[in-house]
Length: 76
Image (cartoon, rainbow, N blue to C red; front, side, top):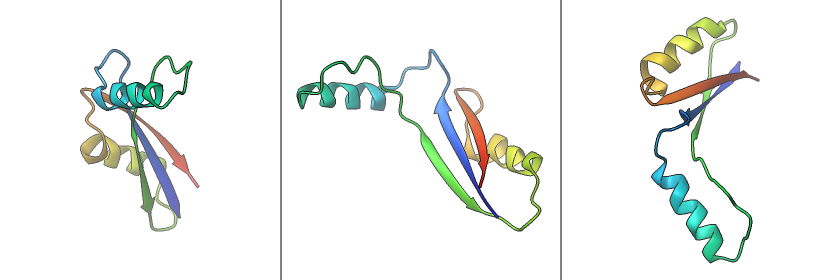
């Protein structure tokens, strides 16, 4: 089975990469981009029957920094 873990910075945490992308888009002439938040997607190929609680445990222990990031699990 496959699952994706979407990791994003929590609201209010400074996102310098997102700010750089926002600035670059403006410099390229793309108007109207008010904010950019950059995150990461981790795709996992798991044994059949792996439960969502196990995936959440993986995310909380390694894949996301729970102090500054949130995550969302998508089982495919």
